[in-house]
Length: 318
Image (cartoon, rainbow, N blue to C red; front, side, top):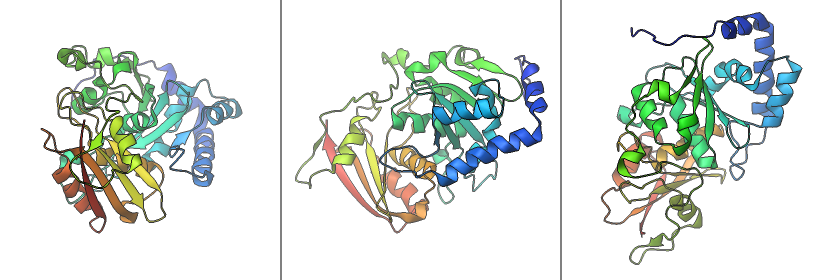
């Protein structure tokens, strides 16, 4: 096992222990009650998100010291979004939205029947969810402030990650600069990095004589963070109940790890408590004849998670 070069503040685990198991269970029960009763509307994009007003109310009700303490108490709740069907290793993560003060809950997701490269880590789930909502994460709570190298590279892609803090119940409060002191970041290729809500591709148009590209697909494609390949891509999942979940590519300056559109769409689907088995159809938009084509990878992953879903592929140009 690797050694830990960082010191922790012992007051944090002591404070968590002093709250007692009853307080911990009461906080978690209150959140579970909200998650079960809330009406998660895909159009509002609020699945798995705890409003700041609710967080502040819980802090006062249970005598917590800060929203960070609440985040640490919610790690077990966040694990309900984990779906590690291969490893059975459950990871929960809680992110604090910089713009709203809302909390985003997420977990790790694995996809049996296809290769391990499609795996989503807990940190990646939270940041992908925030990107889809057009927000940044300022603080993320995880079981140990010790993300793997894959996640450190993933988080380094975001333009706002210079100020990111990572906290854990052990008492660590670490910055990205401490965890990844000499990063290979977007600046190496002259790029700013991922900026939530920024439309890099506002003028996507259908290629050839294809039917008109659905408007939700064009909207998602416009937000694709694809500055390196110049090949924006997006998907829209349509569910049995009519709900739709969109996703777009989040490229990495290192190319791998890149979040594919279907991975982001699955994050949004799972955040709303939906199952891949209820996917009826998938619309994919990708650059016709581009250096990066998501057609085959989408077909592979979709074949593992929703083999009966219809896939429509739209080519577009930028």
